[in-house]
Image 1: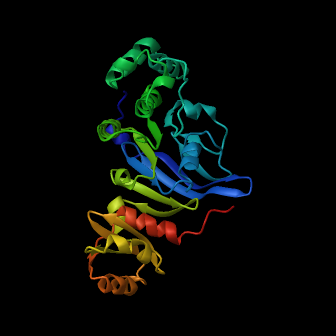
Image 2: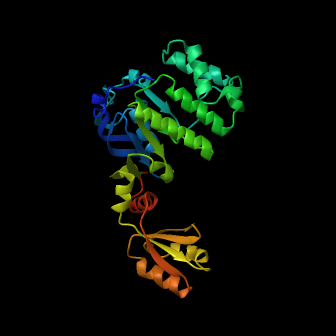
Image 3: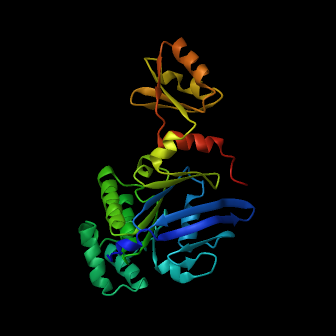
Length: 313
C-alpha cells in the first residue's frame, strides 16, 4: 500500500455540496454535502432506503448527480469521468464476484482490471493476507456469505486506492471477522487513506470519526457520533421490573414514543420529550421503576428518522 505525506492529510479527498440524485419522480438523495480528508473514517448511517447506497455510488463515479457540485480525488463529479472508478476502491452491498471463478482468479482478474503490476503474485499475496488460503481454488459461488464478503473486500482494496467506499462492509460476518475488517480499516486510515462507510449498524457507526445521518434521502445531522447523541432532542428512559417487557407494545403506541425495546433486561424507551409523563404513569401503574438514560447514537438516529418526512415517491 502506498503512503501519503502527512502534509496532505488535511487536503479533502471528498468535497461535495448539494448533491442530488433522482430516479424518475423519486428523489433518492437531496442536497448531500460532505467533506472527507485523507486518514478519516466517515460514516453514512440510517435505515435502508435512506439514500446511503445512492450517495456512495455518486462518490464512486457510478452515478452522475442531477444537481450539486463536488470533487473526489480531484475528479469533477458532474462530468462523466470514468477514470475516477479506477482511483476508488468501492465495495457494493450486493455480491460482485464472478461465481464460477475461483477466489484467486477473482482477485487476479480485479488486479488486472486496475492495471496492478504482477497481478498473479498480487492475488496470491492478498489470499494469504486475508486468511483465504483454504478457499483459494474454490469457486466464489461455493463460499459462505461471510467468506464471500471478505473476498469482495480484498478485491476492492487490491489496487491500493486513496479513497475506499464500503457499503455494509461487515454484513454476514461473525464477531471475529468483523473485528478483522475494522482492523484493516484502521490500518487504511493510518496510512492516509480516506474511508467512507455506509451502514445501518449504529454500533459500528460509532467507530467512525464523523457520521452523516440520512433519512428520507437527506442529511439530518452531521458530526462526531458522541456529539450527535449528546445534542439530540431524544429523551431516554429505562423501565425496570417484572412487567417492564410486557409493557413494550402499550408504551410504543403512546403519542411521542419513538421506540420501546428490550435492553440489558430493562425496557428502553425513546421519546421526543412530550411523552415522558404518559410513559412514567404507565410504568408506575405496572409497578415498574423508571430512570433517565443518556441518549446513544442509535437513539438520536431513531428520533431523526421519526421526525423526517418520507422520501418523495
